[in-house]
Amino acid sequence: MSNMYGEWLKAQRDAAGLTQQELADAAIMTRSHIAHIEAGRRIPSKEDARRLDRALNTGNVLSSFLPQEDVAVADHFAAAMHLEQQARSIREFALAFVPGILQTEAYARAVLGSAFPPRSEEDCDRAVVTRLQRAAVLADPVQPTVWALLDESVLRRPVGGAAVMAGQLRHLVGLAESQRVRVHILPMRLGYHPLLQSMLSLMWFDDQPPVAYTEGMHIGRVHDAPAVVEQLQAHYDLALSDALPLRESIALMRAAAEEFDRHG
View 1: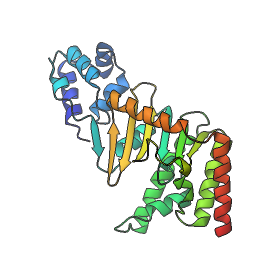
View 2 (view 1 turned 30 degrees about the vertical axis):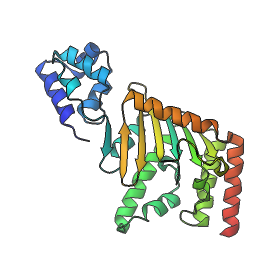
View 3 (view 1 turned 180 degrees about the vertical axis):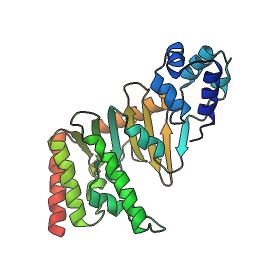
């Protein structure tokens, strides 16, 4: 995302002789939120922008020139990946394949190796390492809390072949049984559900407003506007209400893994 807004905010703060903490105190925000805005990683809400204008005595400049709140990220995930590492709570919905932080190495390699034009072996290795580093957020046994809502098609599509899928599904079963991640499956028999159009990630933080991330073909979008995030959360909650309970979801994943074993 463009950082002109963040750079301008930093210039105004420096001109006022304020530290990030002093500006945060005056605007009733957190220092880390100010830092993320200045670095171009976040966009302030309209209310935050108004408070910044008052704190910096800049009239309504920060409010008037607020950049587009839903910003497409050039590489489809850079901004969201950074936020993912800071989140205290993550809710994932996957329509087509297993979310990145839950992927095994073999599954990740199958996904990342299918790009066109083809990646070089070196580029594929680098991408797999990056994806596995994302999964390091699960090394802490408690935080972030992670819920994964998966369309049943994720279990049925043989990404990487039967052996890779069996291993991936058993990895999900292990995470769910250890209570590190809650996994719920939206069964195919439901037909339409509110999240059928794209994948969705919802993230909450200790010191920043929540964000959402949606992704489609060749585009990823970080949603910072509170009304949009609230609406997407409502869609997630509605779909979750139709999902299978945890134990039934685990049983379905285990059965799918056994089926892949037989076919493999």
